[in-house]
Image 1: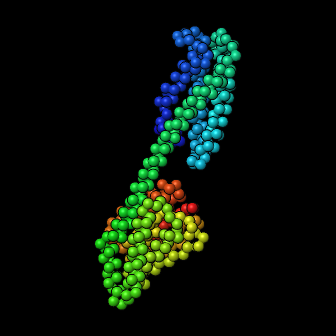
Image 2 (image 1 turned 180 degrees about the vertical axis):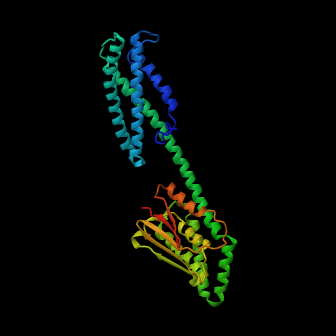
Image 3 (image 1 turned 135 degrees about the vertical axis):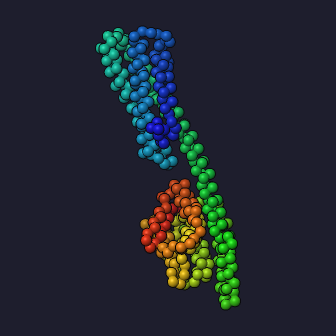
Length: 348
């Protein structure tokens, strides 16, 4: 519906249908001392003029509010928006009132030959215009802020659910029988030939699990911290797949203090392993690097012929958490020979 503009915050059709006639009725009684029940031609003409002016000011003020909310959308711009919006509405309302009222009166007098009194009511008229306009705009702002507050609370709750879902997905990915079985098999194969490497394997596995527990309440963490755990996760994968898996991590030092949502790199790397062939005949290469303010995770595409059905939860979870944080969206590109996910880096 055209009345339910997203920047108004609610469907104000009924508010206008009731409010405009109500102000048309109350303004003459309150500000000009008109009496209820007057049936003279002058009263009807005055009511008609008030209705037209009220409608014009209402629609103009509404349009200014919509423009101002598009022009100054962020929370940091609220004060500036309210100042600019109030000044424009004030000027517009006074201008409309002082231009339209004399014109309508002259037209009505000439067409209906009405004997309208020429008392100077400009002060009362402008006072009524300013008071009623500010009153209506205040109601709009209160409803708008209440809706924005409600949406903010809902988004925070959604972000909590998404974070929990990410943790559960990461835990489910790691603490599943296949993952434990593969890593225990790897560990049992390493222990007889290389006990030192087996100790390193257990330590890195413990590091991955500890990281999941440490970031469970964090919305974002330093890229440096995420990459340190990614190195541990890569160690587990490299121990398991050997030369069949090539993992390259190239991130500039100055990017390490920027932030990223936790567990995202681990999920993306696990997805690459899950959906692609990793063998001596077809080695899998995963590249992690920064470019244009983004972290890129790319792998050569060699899809498995038979694989478990993908739910897309991991990728959608990362995408939704970035959107809820108000950041730039992630970008996914699948080419004939590669699959790339681009994640925006966030400032401190």
